[in-house]
Image 1 (cartoon, rainbow, N blue to C red):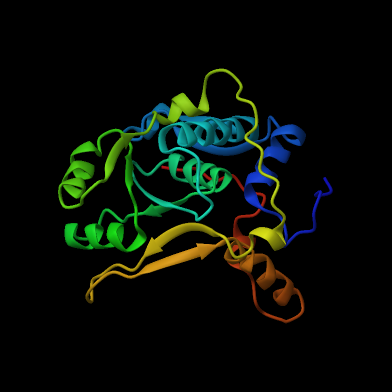
Image 2: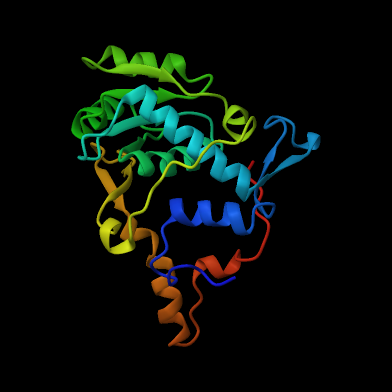
Length: 230
């Protein structure tokens, strides 16, 4: 399949929507039916399902947080290690917001500081993470808690119309995609804002690799292979 834009300039939200049309039933990921018992098997998630979940999440984010003012307002997300992270990162991009992905291993003091530094006014949390979210909220002022829908609520159900996102690579390359942070094990945690331009560094390295010898991009080890999330 020929991409609509050159490799190295493709952006994930538009690419996922494109794959939902051209590779709809191809498998994007496999997730366990029961994360605590892998013997129960895995569920195939197609590109159509993944795209549909992102669009559902985008409309849900806009309903819960309101329209973005264009400044890429941050919000916190903490939850189970499942596809909601990927879904929310791309959904947030569509609505013009950026998620702060807090590590569960960081201290409470570190989490509170990161929330303040990024100006996050909302803490979104997955099932089972309400108590932690509440503890963070108690140390902040004017922060709202919101429980995200379950993963299978976004992956299943009726088809959702596409949430339009038409930015080009040149328009978006410096826009924030998500916010990560240092571990804080040697002191205070620091934020790292990952922009869209960063997402294409692996492709740039593959180009460099093809022009050199003895070097292999890490992505080459898993391209065209099935990946299971556990």
